[in-house]
Image 1: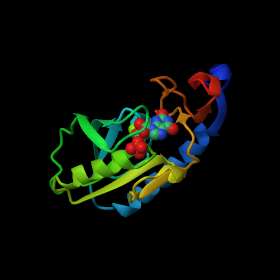
Image 2: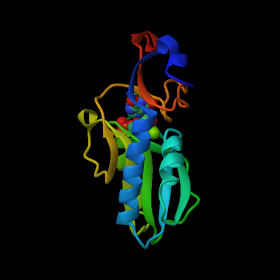
Image 3: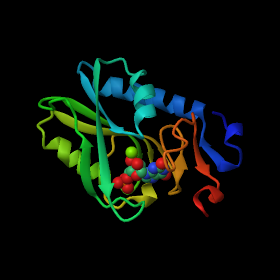
Amino acid sequence: MDVQDMGQDLEKVLLSKEQIDTRLTEMAAEIDADYAGRELLLVGVLRGAVMVMADLSRKIHLPIQMDWMAVSSYGSGTKSSGVVRILKDLDTDLHGRDVLIVEDIIDSGLTLSWLLANLRSRGPASVEIATLLRKPEAAKVAVDVRYVGFDIAPEFVVGYGLDYAERYRHLPFVGTLAPHVYGG
Ligand code: XMP
Ligand code: MG
């Protein structure tokens, strides 16, 4: 799907396919350097992180393993509350492992700070975070994020794994929606 095919749904392209690719290449190089000589366990957070995981992992040269978690944040409406439920847990024992959580976006930071504490309680050697996007102005809790692709304004974005009502995840770029799509 391309920008043109989005027709009137798209307001603007925030990050092009090329910008995302370039930034992920830089992040992978940093990760390779930081973890040289070690084996990494990448933990993808379903479902939004699927694209980031697929593209970032293929740029990493270290030996890696991959596992996935699905979590849901209880909250009123669309805002996450920090009360998190595990829908699908990891299959991997984290004891002694170097874990890198792979995320699509950090908004309030509530989901991720819960996840970080949860994974750190399982005896890993280390747990760090790589996220494609972060909205610094939306932060409610400080989360120490080692690898950030792009800091963006606190507006709702879709594409490259991110959805609006489960749509638009397959867009190769990150964009914002026209207000009529979400009733604005
Ligand atoms: P918190 O607020 O806990 O939540 O950091 C992060 C999760 O909220 C979702 N999220 C978005 N999803 N476009 C989306 O498609 C957005 O702009 C957006 N902001 C937050 C997402 O599931 C993320 O993991
Ligand atoms: Mg997510």
